Structure formats: C-alpha cells, structure tokens
Image (cartoon, rainbow, N blue to C red; front, side, top):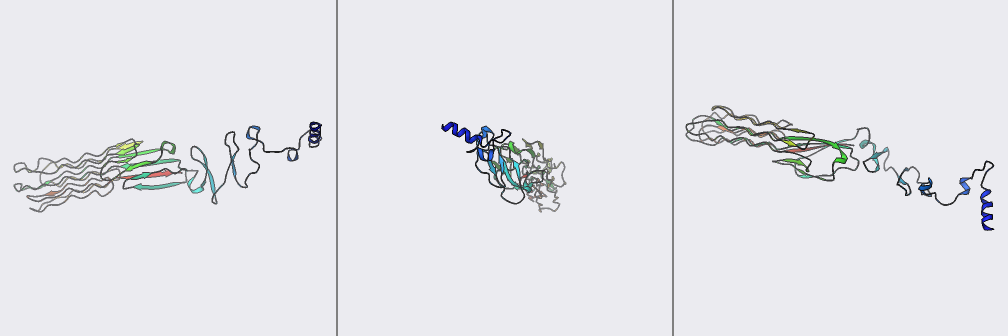
Amino acid sequence: MTQAFNLGQLANKVNTSGQLDASTGLVNTAPVVNGGTGRATLTSGTVLVGNGSSQVTMLAGTTTNDVLAWNGSAWLSTPASSAGGGGGYQLSSFTSPGTYTKPASLKAIKVTVVGAGGNGGAKNPNPANGTNSSGGGGGGGGAAIYYAPAASIPGPQPITVGTGTSSFGAIASATAGGVGTAATPGASAPNTGYAGGNGGTGSGGSINIVGSGGGTVSAFNQASGFGGSSILGGGGRPVFGNVPAVGVNGIAGGNYGGGGSGGSGWFTALGTGGTGAPGIVIIEEFF
C-alpha cells in the first residue's frame, strides 16, 4: 500500500507530456556522478570549479576586477594587474645572498646572473726600475640568462652573489673575472708584459656569456690594463703613473661585474689594482 501510495503521489508531479516537475518532485542533493553539483546551495557570485567525483568547489573573488588565472595546478582568483595577457611584470634584484620564492600566480621567469669583476693587478715597487710599470686589468664577470615557464622552477632557490661566483640555485651561475697580473719589474727588465685577467663564464642559462678579458700591458711606459666589462659594462679605465715615486691606483669596476684596472707607477711607487665590482642576480617575473 505504501509503495502504491508513493507512486500515486509521484504521478501527481508528472505533467500531461509525461515530464517530472524537478522543482517539486525531487528531494536531496544530486551527486556529481548523476550530473549534479553535490551541493544544496551555491554562494552568489562564485565560479564553480570541478573537483573530480566530489562536490564542486566555489571560487570567489577577493577584490574588484579580479580575474581567474591558472598557475599550473589550480585556478586562482588573481588581481587583473598580475594575470593574463602578459600584462603583469615585476623586476627585482639580489646584490647580497638570499632566497627566491616564486609567487603562486607566476607564469614565466627570466633570470640574469652576473659574476663579479676581477681585481686589477697592482704595480709593485722596485727601486732599481727607472721607468713606468703597470699591472694588467681584471676580467669582467661572466653572465647567464635563464628563461623558463614557472613550472620549471622547483621551489625556493638560494641566491649566491657578491665578490665571486653568482648563482640562481643550481640552475644558472656565472663565475667572476680573473685577477690582472701584478707588475713586478726587475732591474734589467723594467716591463716584460703583464696580462689582464680572463673574463668569467656563464653556465646553465638559455644564453651563456663570457665576460671581457682585462687589458694586458705589453710594453714599458704604458698605461695600466683596462678592466674588462661584464654584460652590463663597467670596466675600470686605465691609469698612468709618470711621476717618480708617485703611484696611481687602478680604477674600480663601475658597474656590476666590471673588472678593475691595473695600478701604475715609477721607481718605489706602489699603485694598487682597482677593485672589481660585485655581481648581481636580476629576476624578471611575468604573470
């Protein structure tokens, strides 16, 4: 009797075309497996996101003009200025050691790693040497330019940067430029030639660049070797010490990765080599 009664009640919900009125003839929540959402109510203004066989999730915006952005594994509600259309861009840099952590909404990254510049060679004193002597220039730091989608960056990356090799985790690195040869003239050979330092090298990048070598001093009475330049330029200019017993110090690298120029001087004069400029890691983020 109960079953017959229930069927009779159900028949009251069927229209003249044999269609069941879903607004009054159904109870409980339709599961996803049966084409439903698995939810009894849906929050106004939210976007429904599939969740396998479980009930759909509801994604809501947080601020005006938010848009949906895919981060490689999930949809996120993201400010329009940092998502979609290649319009989101942020530049940052490291000039001291640290850690880079990628944002959840990152789409791609470009990292430029520049090694430090090498120091210029000094002019060492020699009382018996009556002519000018000059040290070789320091080499420019190498560089590595790395570009990749965000998914290629596996978690936080340690940053190494300073007066030696610079690196972006184990992904890309650039060595420092070599030190210029110091001028140590003998009495009978006032200047036999003092080589500049080699340029540093990049590795691991989409593009790897060798820094410019430092200038070599090949004859006496000659200015010091110039500092080699990095991808950012900045090698120190040459100097010339032409006053007895008065030395001239080399010029420091003027930009990240620039090598210092050599020192110069006569007789007992001491001219210190210019200091190479430290390296840098430049990070460009695309959202």
